[in-house]
Image 1 (cartoon, rainbow, N blue to C red):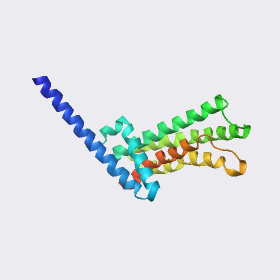
Image 2 (cartoon, rainbow, N blue to C red; image 1 turned 135 degrees about the vertical axis):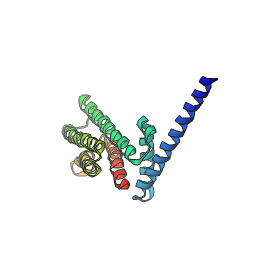
Image 3 (cartoon, rainbow, N blue to C red; image 1 turned 90 degrees about the vertical axis):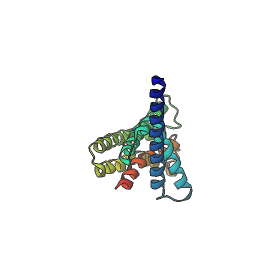
Image 4 (cartoon, one colour; image 1 turned 45 degrees about the vertical axis):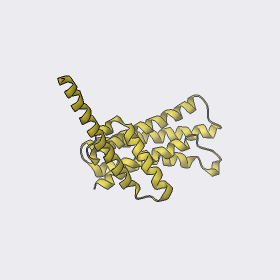
Length: 183
């Protein structure tokens, strides 16, 4: 009987914690997506909610500062995944031209720089330096933006990671916008 009671209490606390975290995620994502219009607003809200919910650390979030840290973790993880995809494309020679290979190598350099900024942002968040972290998130966005700009109509190259870069921009934007909302 006592073990049943203990298990029930633990399950209740877990469900309550999940509801608090989920409510915080939904409210925060709705707030940051209000700066966009129409389809962009809906997509940002959807991406924000799904990316934060997917991270198990979000279930322990009790305030927006906790969510900002989760968003920073997500940005680093997403950047690492995009970087791996590009490395795989280069390694397996799945690029269309030698110019595409050169552009992808340039993207890897940009991603490395962005990784430095994201790591710095996360460290600053942990020290409570939110404004400084926001600047680092802003600088980290350069990698996917400039990577995509390299693949433009003038050089007739198509980015093999366009979809991934666009999502990466959004994922990096989430903690930056949460910082703005928290102020």
